Every structure is written in structure tokens, then in C-alpha cells.
Length: 205
Image 1 (tube, rainbow, N blue to C red):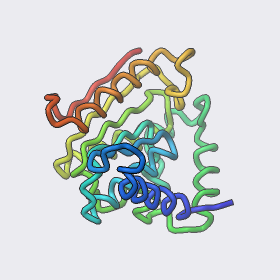
Image 2: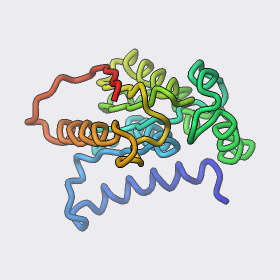
Image 3: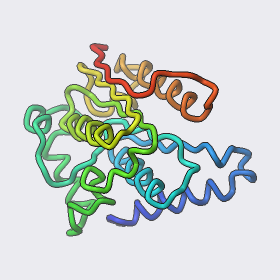
């Protein structure tokens, strides 16, 4: 009902509202983290990029869980896992058509991998699933942010499928992924917590 760029505007205005009303909400408006999975990971990446471009210093971290960062190109993981459960390739392409509704698939606020990558200045945790057609969207975005000097932690749960985070009782990696997310958020929101910035890991869980 509300195709691109409506969601981008909603997310961006929501971030600005939270920062502006931080005192009213009882939160620290100078240490904000955006997060999302799948299509939400796309929006979180876009918002982080917009924040960096606009000089919004309140954003200190971004958590992108199996994010969609490209709208047009077919990456190897999509060909390899075209018939994967939960999200097959045909589903990906249908969602892209519905979301864009004829808009430019290369627009940076639609496909952050095609953008300025200004968001590399904001620490990122990117988690992907090994049996997910979207896997390379996350891996290639992590690589692109690193090339720009970004503090990026990339974790691949090799035996997981798209959506594993929403299935904590079924998918073993879900609890580990959540624990890693909590640890990351604590690190980027608390300067006193020391941690090794930027890493890459694979997990068989």
C-alpha cells in the first residue's frame, strides 16, 4: 500500500523524533542504535547512511541481520539457494517488485550497497545465514563498509536459514545471535567497555 520511499521517510523521521524527544522518553539521545532484519536491515542500513551524511552524531551503531542491500543484481548466494526455505529467490524478486513499484532499483536509499557508504563511520554488526539467498547482500555490504574504513563485525551462521532470529525455539543460532547483538549494543553505547572493533566469524550453530 505504501511502496518505496515511504518506509525510508518513516524510519528517518522516527529516528529524528526519538533523538528530539529523548528526555521525554527517558533515554540517552546521544547514543542511539538502529537495527533491523531482512527488509528492516535494509532500512536500518539506509538510515545509518543518511545519518552519517547529515552529520547526525546521535547514531552510534547499526545492527543489520540478513539485510537486503541490493535490489537488482543476482549474487552467488541467491543462485546457490534459489529454493531455500522461508525466502526463496522468487520470493525475493516478488518483494523487490512490490516494494519499488517501478522506482529506480539503483537508488541509494533503496539499495544501500549502491550508495555513498557514508554509514561506514558508524560501527556495524552484520549477521547472515549460510543457507539464505540474501547471504551475499550482507557479506558484500560488510566488505564495502570495511573498504571505507568501517568498524564492522560480520558473523555467518553457516547452517541457518533466513529468519532464524525469529525462531529461538527452533533455530539454535537465534540465542547466540541475540547475545552477540546485546554485546555489540553495549560496546557502542558505552565507551568505557573495551572490545575488539571489527571482526569476522563463522558459526556452525
